[in-house]
Structure formats: structure tokens, C-alpha cells
Image (cartoon, rainbow, N blue to C red; front, side, top):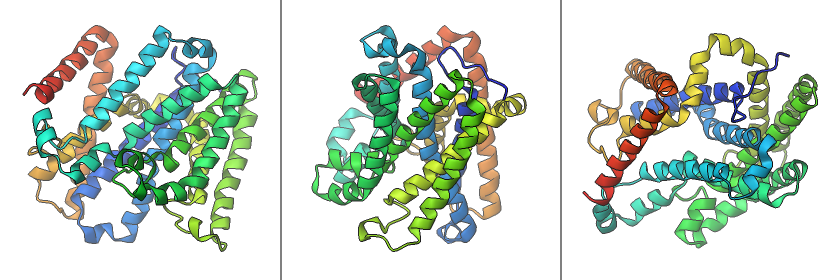
Length: 381
């Protein structure tokens, strides 16, 4: 197959295609969930789209794990010591983590947050959404790389921990009720957390394992055979997971759609198949669907932007699409709003992607101005 060239950071374009696809699926899922009535959401068609929408979190985690390996593979030693590269990486993760928790604030000032936050609002603030889960998972990968002597050992330990997480998810969710709120929010989906570390960190570990095997195959000139083998193993994983789920299982594994390790393995198989497809189609798609790759590169911007615009935030509680529109909407109107909203988000991301390429320092200044403005509003207003 035609080899694509990684960027200087080790970034491969097929990951941008995956991210671009799923950030658009995420916007679609959030928009329709906000605008459609409960009766429509109870229908069969909506449940099918909801299954696809629920792959977005695992897809971003899988891609993040693979990207971690690609960006580190040739420069492992640089990230094992306290170097400028490692400091820059950790700083980027910290910025993402701050943005993630800022999106979950109930009040836009520290004074009101300390004085008026209710226990339920505090539980929501501590909960894990996709950005928090990605950052904590990447920190785990960084720690594993530091603790393992080679990439081969990193691969082995990642697979083992991913399987342990999948198997212990029912236990972690069940034990969360007796733990402190901050710890329960990290591990249990029976709190306000949408993406607790159990099982979702397992997808980042699976992505890192995939990234290692793929990078090794590329270096050895056997990428085609690796991708063919991956299709067989991933398909077997999907079929085997479904087949075993139909058998009588211990009661602890009966909740297939939330805590079962079989559902985890099914989604890993699906994501591996998607990764193979995106990698094989990468040369063709990049020439025709470069806008999709752009959305992948700017997926963080689209994510951070679309939530306040759609739902509002602590800094704009009364100005959002949900506030402006008479929700719920008829299906046709909701679909029209979703399409217009998606085009608007992609247009903003495309402009930013184009502008920052030739205005790197100005773009960095814009980020600092935005961060400074909201920091001033939160801490001093």
C-alpha cells in the first residue's frame, strides 16, 4: 500500500480521519439528544444512531492511545527524562484538563462556586467526561512507558492492564458507592461520570497496543500483512464477543451494555476494523475528504466550542441553542438545526486551521487572551 508520511510529531493522517468522523458524530448525537422529544428518542432508529454515537468516546480514546505511541516511538528517551518535550506534553494535557473541568462548572465565578454549589453540582464537577478520561489515560500511558524497559514490554503491560480493567469494571462500578466521591467518580459509571476510567481507559491502552504493532509493522515493511491479519483477529473478536454473550454467564457480567468485558472487547474489535479501513483508504480519502481530516485536527476546538453554544455553560448560562429554540422540536426541524450547526462548527474550525498555519504566534496569543479573559472572570469578577 502507499505509505503516508507522518508529520514531524509522528501524527498519521488516518487518525485525523477517525477523529474527524467521530467529532461530527458527537455533534450530531449531542444536538439530536438536546432537540428531540423523549418519545422520538425511544424509537428504534434513534437507538441505532445512539449505538454509533456511543462509539465516539472509545474512538477518541483509541486514537489518543495510538497517537501517543506514534509521537513517542522514535524519541522514547526524550520523554523518559524531564526534558522540554516532556514539559510541553504535560502542559498541553494540563490545559485540556482545565478546559474539561471549566466546562462542568455551574457558576462562572469562584465566589459563587464556593458559596452556592450544591452536593449534586459538586458531584457533576468531579465527574469524568471524555476530555478528563483522555488526559488521565495518557498520563497512565506516560507512566507505563517510564516503568517499562522497552516498547515490547510496554505493549505487553498495556494489553494486560486493558484486560484487567475490562474484567474488573463490574467490581469497580459496584464498589463506587462506598468510596469518597472523588475516587468513585474516577472509577464508577454509577456516579455522574460518563467516561469513568473503568472501562474507558482500556480503550486508550488498546489503541496504544495497536499503535505499537502498527508502527513495528511499518518499520519492518510488512504493513499490508499486518492490516490483513488485524482484520481477521478483529472480526473474530467481534463475533466471539457476541457469541459468548449469548451463553449463560456469571451474574456479575450480565450487564452487557455497560460493564461487561465482552462489550468492551466488541468495541475494541470494531475500532480496530475502523482503524484498518481508515489506514487503507487514507491516500484516497485525504485527497477527497481533506475537510474531514481538518475536523480531526481541530476536534478539540469543535468539542470545546459546540458544548457551550448548544447547551450553555457557567459563563453563558442564558445564551444557547437549547435556550433560544422551543425544545423539543419536530424531527425535520431538529435535523435542519443539526445540519446548520454542524456546518457552522466545521466552518469555524476550518478558518482557525487555515489562519493558525501562517499566524502561529498570533494564534498562540489568541489562546492566551481567551484563557486570561475567562481566568479573570472566574477568579476576580
